[in-house]
Length: 267
Image (cartoon, rainbow, N blue to C red):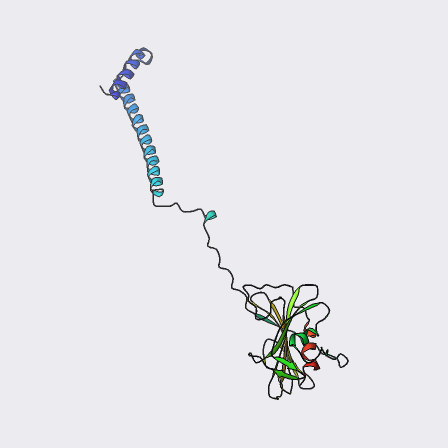
């Protein structure tokens, strides 16, 4: 006998015992109640089966998403980002600086003897502080320039005014007499009353060094350049081994111009 038949029989017996209270026995009531009971059990079983199928489907889907070889998508909050490339090193930049106007009463300094190593002659122009002679190339003797292998007579010193040492170099060369002019470029240039051209420039190099320069070209063809760095290494500077030793070069543009325009370097 099936469970449904057993349930119907028990229900039939129970209703038969209470038939006196409900009147004569009616078989249709018993059969109808049994049928309704079967329908309720079928509905309940169907709901349970549907719920189980839904849970099983979700489990299968989760297993497929987390199967070996397939990594879960990262959360947007932890999505890895690539490191931006380092910005390129800044290119050398020149600064226009005004050429100081020296009044007639403020004559350029004379320096020391016009003979001997050029570094010693340059050292005579240095302001108070500690000056160390470094090197000389070529010669300057009583107005005569003897060029070095690089076609320039030069001398270099290190000067420390109490704020760190910096290098200062003077270079001398001769050209044929000419009419000086101001060629265009990232510098300040002007022609003095006697026809001398004076060019002043401040450059920040990619290595972090500062290069300040005053270049003078006289009508007789004599060319004098005074340059300085904010490091104690003599030029040319090796950026891999040298580093700035002070915030700015030791001399002002006005002091560089005074050295370059000095009668000391005249023919």
